[in-house]
Amino acid sequence: MALNSEIIEQWQRSSVLLIGGSAGSFKIIFRMVKSFPHDLNKTVIIVMHRKKNFFSEIEKLFAENSRMLLVEISDKEEIRGNAIYIAPPNYHSLIEANGHFSLDVSDAVWYSKPSIDVTFESAADVYKDKCTAILLSGANQDGAEGLLQLRNAGSLTIAQSPEDAEMADMPKAAINLNAAKYVLTSTDIFSLIQSNT
Image 1 (cartoon, rainbow, N blue to C red):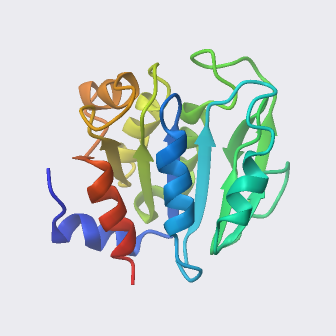
Image 2 (image 1 turned 30 degrees about the vertical axis):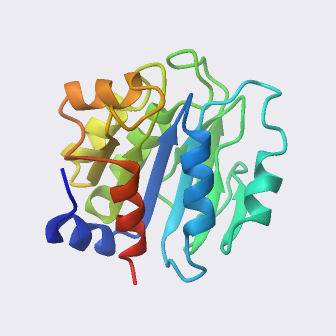
């Protein structure tokens, strides 16, 4: 499926971009972080599966290559516009109705903490149709249910094309649930991001 005016218009109306990824998603997320203009004027929230002590330098690497403010989410932190937030390992990151994050230490979901589902589901309640969510490569089903809740709330929901993903399971699970309104290749995802200005 190629980009069309409907996708672009809904993306441009969004105030928040959610990105979920697991195995095989690091490269595309890194490219996205590098490609965001300094005046994207959206809040970007990244939930990426990582092992407890793996990618401990990820925030530093991303921040050094980002033109936007980039920070790891902390508990009770106010969510600002035009900033990139990365979910920390060993916690679930939730979005509160008062415009703050909260961190949760409950059990892993789909063997993952942070869980993409947990963040996406909390975002659906808060952002509704002001949100774009993209689910990328991964080896399990985390994110599919959350993406469906976002779609039902009116968000623009996108799954990476399974043929384009390094690991197809995660986007396939979302497509099978009818959670993704659109299925796009990484090339189209980048074109969409660049259409913001």
